[in-house]
Image (cartoon, rainbow, N blue to C red):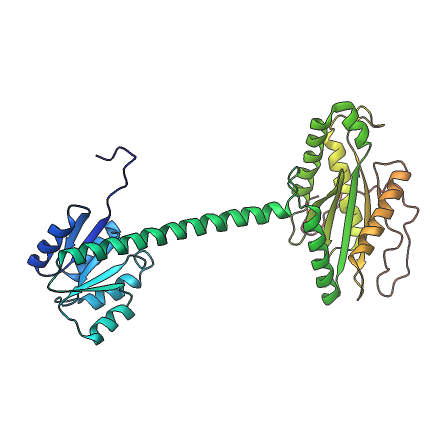
Length: 349
């Protein structure tokens, strides 16, 4: 009886149409292994699929399906392909052995059978299989951990949005794509108003929860393909908006500002009594040679204007390039922008 600490016995399947041969192998192996047997190829395949033995000892000369056909069928099935097969046969010429090895067998045992040789070969092949299985398991675990690390390398640990490194990579990528295709690209940069006061008044644990709340709001609001909400640093967050005109990004920034204010997170040190953000927006049709820094600098300039104008508002950069054929209408004096509810393609109202 296995008490949970013992290593389970390996299962070995013998496939041979001669009962005497099965009996000989059974007597050799029964002391160390659980032995199964089949008297023809079809039954052998069925038992392999049901029991998944650790090793198969397979006769070649059998009526119906011979050993070569059985081996080929098992190696062609992903469920059974990795189970080692050893041919046991009286056929000892080089061509027969070569054919079996080419079909996927790992070894040959020739009749008459030598018990010490059988035991030694079986032990060695089971040891190799155990090592192979362990290596495969460790490789799978390593790949899983590498995937997890790759995700962690792109995500801000506190808020769950992208981190600065991933933002930088995605901004560059989307800029190049927009440049190739002659499309818009916009950026939203937002900052929690009076966040130092919030931390001083409520404590840093509450401050972290506040950042997480804004992170959740960003993740829920920007989910279209290519959109990347990220933590830019401290209490600053940024959103990459591919294929989005700056005026549309401005409306989205206003929607974000309004949604956070409507959550009514208490902020006694704020002039409006709840947590709010100021938002700066930049963007336009991407010109050849344009650098990522331009979008960041212009969004930061607009954010500074929003804060200087009283906070809790959205400002669009006055340096956004005009559309082809249209005069440039600057937004340098834009204060808080108020928009009627709009339905944007791909967005909720």
